[in-house]
Figure (tube, rainbow, N blue to C red):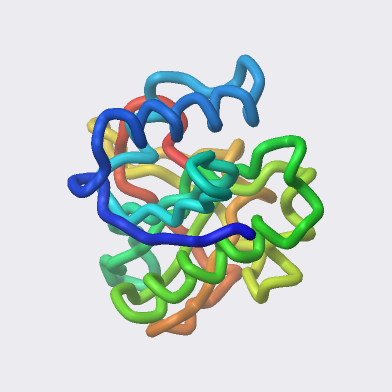
Length: 177
């Protein structure tokens, strides 16, 4: 039977972090960079264990998104994956349930960037596709990020945003969204 536990990055030892990285590398075959790994750390993790084996993971890290003249304290979901041989058993939903509990208690807004394959999963959970333009607050100022359009989802928890307005994320190395 699978068990979901939550913990902050600071509470995870080297063996657990190594297992998380291995799971994410396997799940995102050749598409999980050092920047992606860095984005996954520093927040709350939902870890799905089957005995001593890690079979699922997701994390929420704090970011600031600008919208409607406000800087919103945003829980950004990163590194959601379930081991290939355990998919289709509701474990991804269990990961998201734990992360959404964190979002509802600590943030103004939840946000994530979804692959085409995962978009329906998030939409079915109540995540809403951002319909307006996406941008980043880069070192040079606000820069349009067309690659964020059509893949950015939000979960309103304390603020109800205008989904057709501009959404600006804070700068970070690698994929900004």
